[in-house]
Image 1 (cartoon, rainbow, N blue to C red):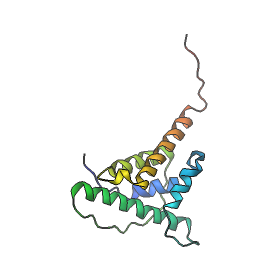
Image 2 (cartoon, rainbow, N blue to C red):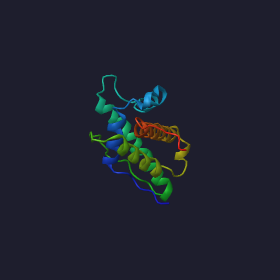
Image 3 (cartoon, rainbow, N blue to C red):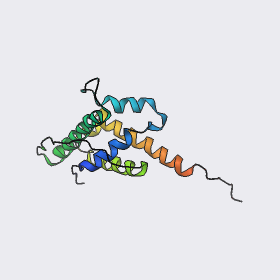
Length: 140
């Protein structure tokens, strides 16, 4: 398996969607997502909070790649910019990020486990949205 550092657009799309989503009504996961931004001022804007979370996710991805290739991936100068993104795009981008972070001891971290939980919530929401309104009939 090869690993790479996802681009800023990927992170921006994930963060824009998650920053405006109710996490399928799961308050615990929503709280855990927002808690990632623990080093922001009390009066921080929505964008500043998402930027803080983006830096953390970018650092996690860089650490995974560093562990994979046994080389130091210097911290980036990531800066959040809103990107339009629907739920399916957000899911695909989040899956990509999670996959690229699946190196070394990263899958054992709380942040990685949170990414996996968010993937599951998105999967459920997509399936529910796709199936909603369909009539299930028994076949004879």
